[in-house]
Amino acid sequence: MKTTPSLAILLACSFAFIIIQLDVTIVNVALPEIGRELQAGVSQLQWVVDAYTLGFAVFLLSAGALGDHFGSRRVFLSGFALFTLASLACAMAPDALLLNVARAVQGIGAALLVPSSLSILNTVYAHDRKMLAKAIAWWTAAGGVSIAAGPVLGGLLMSALGWRSIFWVNMPICLIGFWLTLRVVPVLHHSGPARNFDVPGQMLAVIALTAFIGAVIEVQALGLTHIAVVSAFAVALMAGALFIRVERRSAGPMLPLQLFRQPGFGPAVLFGVFVNFAYYGVIFILSFYLQKVRGFSVLHAGLIFLPLTATFLFSNIVSGWAQARVGSRLPMIVGGLIGASGYALLGLFGISASASFWAMLPGLALIPAGMGFAVPAMTTAILASVEKRQAGTASAVLNTARQVGGAMGVAVYGALVAAPETATVLHGIEIAMTVSTALLLAGALLAWQTNFNQGEKLCHS
Image 1 (cartoon, rainbow, N blue to C red):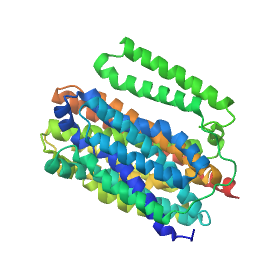
Image 2: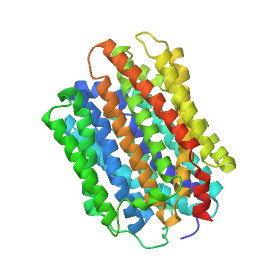
Image 3: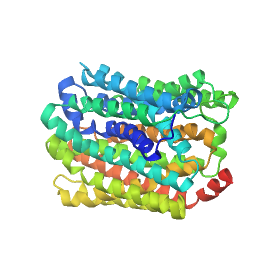
């Protein structure tokens, strides 16, 4: 196959991240209407979000191994196909149970797309680490804009066509991405032996994460001492312990634990957990706040999220420029501090029974600005800390941790706003903003204490 311009390959990979991130947030503004039509409670609506993020999270590590074994391009195309079929099932779901099952399958499709797309980029730009940083910044910008635009697009579609349209819109995007991949992405060969598919590890990961997130979601409805909640936590603990034991003894683990010995790898992963926990949880509860507490229409609520889009795009681009000059550490520190400021301002001035849009605007602008500045640097730090042949696995570990963090954020923050009383909901949102501020400050401190640039030099010297 002829060498294809790397810009066209970047566009193909970006289409995948656009659709993945869009489906993280586009459903949020639709949740109240989905609840009314399908007669679903808050815990079932939390599963509409978390079934997707869990399916995404628990299969990401295996998807990295599949990409190493069968080739990134083949797995990438399979992810597009599965995501399209699952979106069709979501659009036609007759009840909350089948919707959530289809959402989980959507997440599996997304899992096939992310590590393979990053592995493709890492191979295409392997000759130039600065260009890799810029490519990842643009890739992240595409996803960042779509995750921010999700509530806006969801509001527009909902007001015109109903909640099922938010899944129909996936079809043309997926088909374009599939066609573009066939046209421009070459068959890429990985150096080094491919890893085996780790069936015991995969099963234990599914059990541990599903049981844990399910227990957190059901705490508010059933109580912490309910037998179902206690049992789910116990299952999660046992499955998690067995998972670590299996991975330590496996000749081809889905989670190579030695990755965490690489300088900067563990801190970057933890940074990603903090970022996603705060952002996914806050977007979830803000949608309920705007529609249930403030009484805004779905379109009005979606438009309020519009400032998220512009600052995501700008900060992602600036992050790529900054990384090429100063490395990953400083953008992560600055991004964490900016994000923390946004959550603090939103909690102090933007959340009340009568707060204006202008009171919310500073927080809504700074939160994505901080994320957009920090996340590309975090992703580059992860890829630069490992050998090229481990790029798919490393990116899968990062994104697994981020999706688990996001699912936990929705579960924990959703419990804070599950009560029907307005005063209780407002107090729960204030707590969520305080926790989010603390998490981003902790992430900035973690980045301050970590020499990511040293890890990059050790790996690529």
